[in-house]
Length: 363
Image (cartoon, rainbow, N blue to C red; front, top):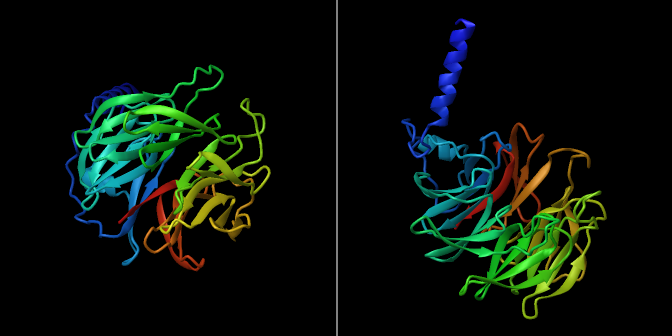
């Protein structure tokens, strides 16, 4: 093909691609595979700006793994950076951070159901009721209120704090205790916000340590948050990371454990009975919430501290307490997920999509 004709061809290809309606599912033969009543979805983030996020499904009983189930079923790319996933009844809500949307699919058949758009940089979705859910946001300075039944935005909760030096508040994970929803604010922040889910208002702030990266609630109703401490040279500051327990009766910090002075802990997870915490601090740490001792190494990392990928995410099956450990490898090639029993015995090794960043368990 001559250079001029080649240029015209690629120009027309770009125009046609840019005008493609992402609701028009491509005609293709569907896999016909379905999810079991118990299993785990692996949310593969993909690379920023590459639109290569994907969704894997694993059946722990049969040990069958289906990669890229959303695209294989619907002929529709998942998008740019899949952040998290939430299941409510028969529907699964997949939060696509850099695409600014939430895709909704049938969690049994993987078939496309719809989407929620008009979001800035969504991170996590929390159901308040069947007709109201909150979506946190990295850059929006608000929590979006949606009607998940109608897939519509119905309002927002303003969380701006008038600080111009940093883009606060960047909201992340959410847990609920009574009518109050607690939201950790990670990026250049040190707070957990308290939202009244009846009035949809920000009513209180709990100050913790620098950059609460993730958060869970234990069986006693206490919140645990893992702070990463920022990074050297950060304009917001840098300190040793910490694992912090907050009593919700008085919203006060009751315990602080510091696993390492200059490490970068991530992805706090909890088992189904709510009494054992796991997190990654290069190695995998485990901590019993009723223990007087601090967190201890449960599984050592085979990687050097300077490795760019490595152990990246953790999920704990709420039924079996099996531990799923995502390994991002070099952050470019398809990642690996390791499945362990609660006593640390290896059970399975799965080759997934790029950067397995989160897990969502079917119950």
